[in-house]
Length: 413
Image 1 (cartoon, rainbow, N blue to C red):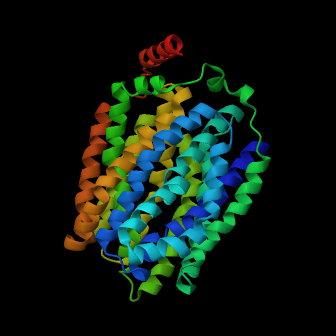
Image 2 (cartoon, rainbow, N blue to C red):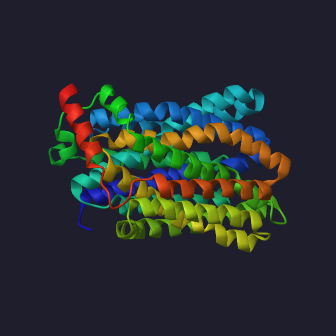
Image 3 (cartoon, rainbow, N blue to C red):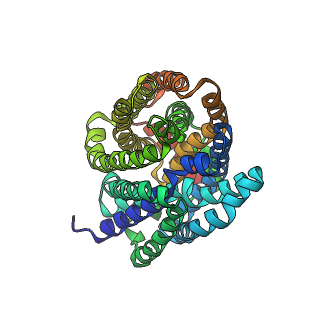
């Protein structure tokens, strides 16, 4: 593709996800093996991440739509990525050991700003660029998956050598991110969804009075959110299936890297699949794959079987992410796409994660991973069926909703 903006933003995706996944994929192992935290404590940390992400995402979403295609937020996130190594080694680890709850709060705030909430800012920005410069978001996002795969592969070896290396590798990626971002110039005159009147908080408030927005959020809460909580401590369970945790850590790095590599291919194919079956059916398909993987993980008894089942994540994530963007763009006002994505999708995920993470962590401590996986898989299955009935049909575009909102914006703007 002879599109310079596409290649620059794809490279940005690659390096950002490398910096994130080079440490984040091994974070539960770092918590459990180096810091000796319990499942309940690890779940509490993930709940803190979710709460801070939930608080930050509406502000990130509003600011993203307010400033349009300006890069201020992206520069801010790059600075935070650069601070990953110093923060984890000199601040976060000592705090978690000596004052767990203070460390949890500060760590959750920083992680959310840079990654858990920050990633949605980057994805939303590049999705808008795709609409301006006529390239599929999924194809650009595929490079993020490749970067994540490389990061996890490198982390698998680095972690057993020195766990702190994974955090310094993340900081190193920020230099490349900054160089890429400095060369990106976006022509806002080509963006039809930016030319109209600027949005305000009243417009956003009206958007969330629409029933279909809330039904979408409930579906995400019961499917993608529960699935995310299931996946938080999967690395710990996987490593426990091997003769030594060191061997389990290394194999998990290879497996996760291969899975993310497949995810990159899935991101290239997913737009064709979703365009063919429709965004609603894409969401239901993703929910069905989640259900199968979770229940399958609870039934599998050996590393080979559970490794094969884990690879399904590559298919599920690709279809889910593309379907979410297309569903929101098709059914709601595109000028508010950042708010819809960060709040309607990401906030639903974080809200459920904040509530469920410590509960599920305690469930792992009491009844074990396998039983917990079966229960969580059944929950996702129920909400997938719910979505089949309540999500907007692919054959119906709710024009009355968009026209109602646009008329309201014109009158109030």
